[in-house]
Length: 109
Image (cartoon, rainbow, N blue to C red):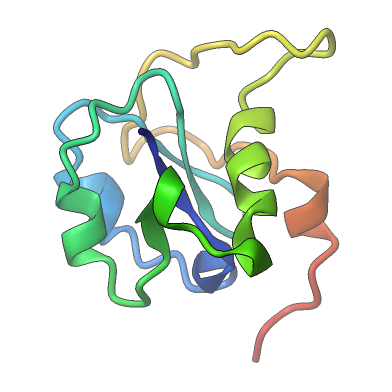
């Protein structure tokens, strides 16, 4: 069961999760981080360091946040819907384009 980053991360982007990820499967977007579903080894380290409690195992996500399961997958999918792999995140990587649903979310103050 993969880990998923939810809406609490939008406009926070602390980055502690990406810094501790042993497989670099957490990628920085313009407004939030995303976990690549097939690169994640489900160790849970990221969940334990998230300062805004935005990371959960997929089966622990309530109905109000279920859309983020698809958002975390879709951001890594090509036009045909196939999952692609960017090859691992690093602090030197430029932020990837946010999912349209995240980009459309009103900016938090």
